[in-house]
Image (cartoon, rainbow, N blue to C red; front, side, top):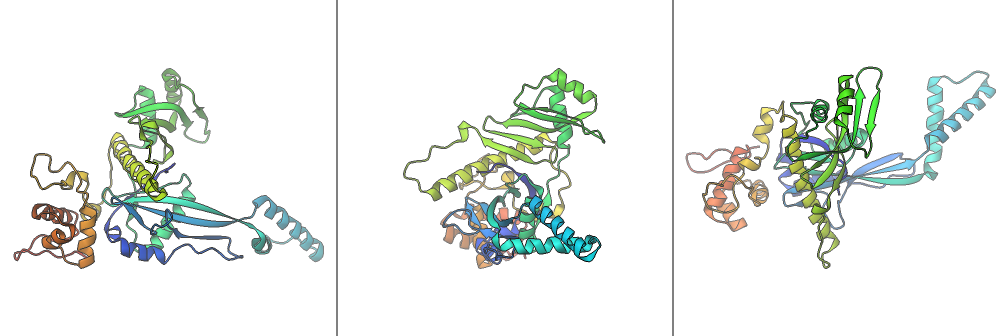
Length: 387
């Protein structure tokens, strides 16, 4: 389902608690097919048939951006522009300048647009409000910029920042190759690229070829660094890590491929596969960030406004055992949505609507307090919803 991952951090999960409000904001920028003279049109579409624009499965949200483009071969446009420029020169007696050449090119594009073929490109992204991940399924920076640009228009302000780690991926990958040892729970595969810094840009690539440790060390000693490295995580997912901290060529291994019951609908299969892959990729990211020395430059505001992490979340049950902080309460997202919808952070409200016990409802509210979503309990026993 996901082949690539451009990784970002949410500085606040607040825009994603109320799915109704989120869908209303996305609907203002829903995809509408472009007209004959529009070179490119983009907007949100449902991730699957019958779904909302923001489709949530067990707290994880998937969106799809559709980009409609007219196919105008650059070479053909350049040749037509050059021919039109020669005609101008023969007619006027001088060559057109840069500004006029641009106008000629734009006129040719306008003439060709009505008859140009149209193609669609759907770009998926998923959002994990609890762990504060935003992942875009693309390896192209331009496509990622389109997604982020429309997110920023749809949700203002959009709480996003780049993921920063303590150790640069290039340095880490170079070290793993030099030591011939991958970090815990990872293994090194047979594809890699080592590139020299500076102007030479000399590169050595291993493609489906065993990576000889001594050979690699010689290249490293000559000044090359690893810029791409194929790896496998937990014998579940193979992928390629880049120097920009992008993950490409994601491929689930056989252990992750589910055999769906024959009577499952397409919607059920889609949701199951999305939940499985999103959950496993989130675990992969957590271990990868740890292998790269952990995160750095995490703003204090992010810790205040974001949802609690897995270690902070309450247990599903009402017991008070030693493992009370080891699991995420699956009702947390529903409880947050409920409190925001009614504007009243009340234990009784959560108990009544979610049909759970007092202790569990109280712990859900305490988790919201830790996340900065509600105030601490006041002297009269009430709480208030933070703006």
